[in-house]
Image 1 (cartoon, rainbow, N blue to C red):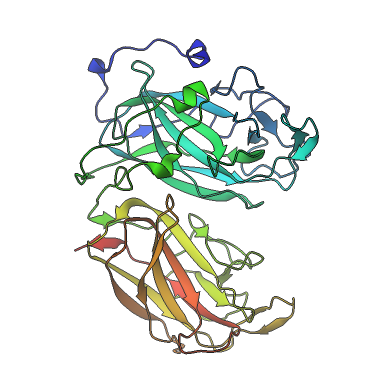
Image 2 (cartoon, rainbow, N blue to C red; image 1 turned 90 degrees about the vertical axis):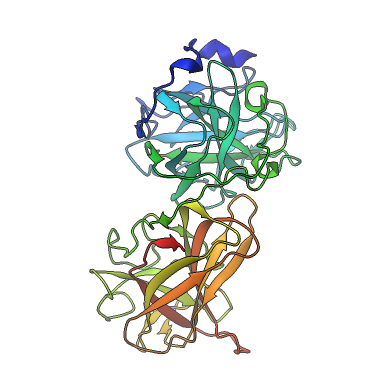
Length: 426
């Protein structure tokens, strides 16, 4: 049990601090004196196998050239084809309380190159296998732990901000662990993650937990480096919370500057087009005045059938069978233009429809919750939706542009999006 050589004994859980709202992490951007292999950043402890080296301070190691998202340095962690992985941990000042909910975010990317020796073949290999980030809560007194969050498979070479809602349901935790792990437990590959600029951990007040029966058991998976099911095998409702009002961050996109190929701040890009991103308007492809504030977002469809979509991890779930209201301002600009996939600037003025989807980041299940009539008006109009998940619970909302349902061909088109409301349970 090598893991406990690095921890300090802690008081029993009978003396828990109650009501703490914000937990600041030490060295959240993994800064160091210089980059280098096998270095655990200040403020963190290594929880990887004692037979392997610690994570790496990047950039500049193993042919990684990605610039830091924040500060000068960031963390690189790998998974290995022999069944070992890398992870770091940090004790928090207080306790993440059982049956409470917390928000946490971190910027994640994957370098195109992470060249190192394969432990299995003894040959150099690019550690580019499918990898996820697992966030673990750990109790240093009782040794209980729980998978509190898991990212989607990381494949983007661009930094993207991932949001997590952490729900301790089995114990109180005074340590948070960040672990690079296999996207598929049954296929151990050489992979990696790049991490930078963690947020604080912030409690979400006034959360009610639905009662779904037995909660999943805890395991010692991360302390003993033994394979076991990933977070997705737990009860799908074990980490679900309910809130009456779910606000969206950067809901009018006012934290963004105008520009092409930009994913709005606080949002995730979820479109099928991998070589394109939305535009922050006006001034790129549209001269229309915003529906609210100073900027808005344009989502496009492309002649090869690809579509753009943005999403946001929610602070609480949209629950199956519950009813929610949501609204957003939409418009079209007949003179909208953008770069086509061939690289030529063309008209993207064709009519499209707009969809609201629910998405479950653990199971990858999605459901269309609402769809508009064709958006063919040049003025801003607020669309009011009633969202009723029928197939499952969703922790992410997605906003997508789509071709007309009756269309038998693909084309270049767009929709303009502004001023999203909060999601309110009825």
